[in-house]
Image (cartoon, rainbow, N blue to C red; front, side, top):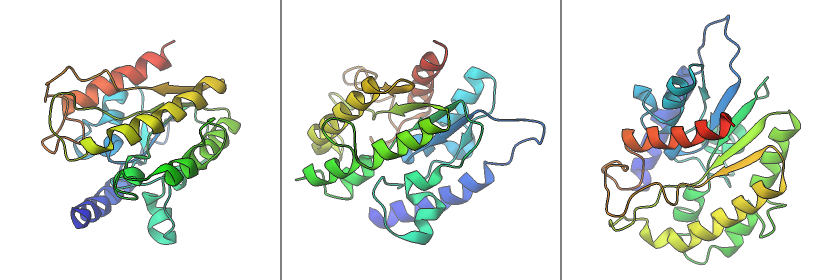
Length: 226
């Protein structure tokens, strides 16, 4: 499974680089960053960022990468986007849409005894950790931040179902951070999927289907339209 994710990551690193070409007379104001939940379907422009472009009628620069992590120490692939913080590029962004942390829990600690890893990403009070530092860096530029949570699969089996408790604890900290900082918003997807409904997930029961990506984009757009 990890070898497959690595191969997919390199493919999406290539796509992420190709996807940044925009018309010279366009000044994009929205940046998307994160892992495979954000990057899924990006090649067909039917991922979260592609749907958000369609809903809003304006460009979204998508630098998300399959397999990316919050905690990632390899310098070369980290700079290419496997380290989520290094996906950020300074710009005249009004909005930065961000997700991440799932791979750190699933691949980093197997969703077992992850307390230290979660603490490194985001402290219990939402004030420190790599995610809090990244969000502060983005907010210092003037951009608002939308942190997007993960899909659940209620009533349907999934190979990451055992990550539920760790994922819930992690997202509670993200939500706490967002409540404390003006201009930071948390979009929970915990209630997005109806019980037993498989149509919001891809065949792997982990990533969003095209329908799921569209629904996630709609929730993000609602925040931006307030």
